[in-house]
Image 1 (tube, rainbow, N blue to C red):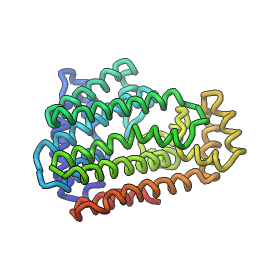
Image 2 (cartoon, rainbow, N blue to C red):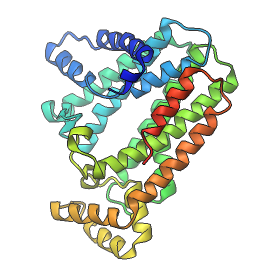
Image 3 (tube, helix red, strand yellow):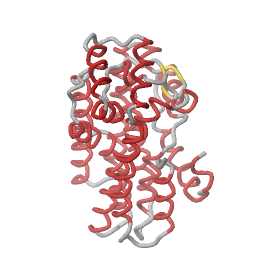
Length: 318
């Protein structure tokens, strides 16, 4: 496990886990059993980032753990909704709510998790901070809607892709860091730096995830390789490969125009992305984002959490 090397963080995450489990109880036993299954697995990066960011401040309280739990439940809600939109069957190696119960019921499950997350955060954060929660949710929803309506569209630019993941993945990492810093009493400059750190890390994290979707082992990702392409989601390795290889780009346009990707076409696209340097160019972008993230950490106090952040960043490097 990622946190086995950091016993203190692992101990704090156990407190977060207890709060999560307590907030996933339901009158419906089948529903509660599914929620408990959904809660297992995952690296718990977002709540860990809340805890780590709190390490830069002097005030420590249970509110930090409650906020971290609320953020993770919010993340779980987005996963349930993602799986409905993508019509995904597997998540973390297990059947999704969409597969088990269908889209209609799954929508309510995602909404329930969202309500639980907001309820928990509303007990933890002052009223003026809840506006950040609302703005973050708005940003994530807008990015998801934009991604849905741009499926199979190979005209998507790199800038458009970057803006999308900035409003989606990065927004939640930035929020995780910001609330940990706020609740621990960090001054405004430290808070701003940690928010920006979370944002740039989130960009790199999403790009790394895009690579794993093409090259990762199913046992590691919990999803079939090339699933994004099958769903028509255009990610940075695809964009970079088409930029460098016009012949491949022409083939890709013909395939994606049908809005259905056959297995043999999927294999061709994945091979061409790798041969055309799409993976290598994405690693270069990851390094660029991690460099910006590290620049945000540099002026911060030299607490142990600073090195842990850097250790986590190193896992995204080639």
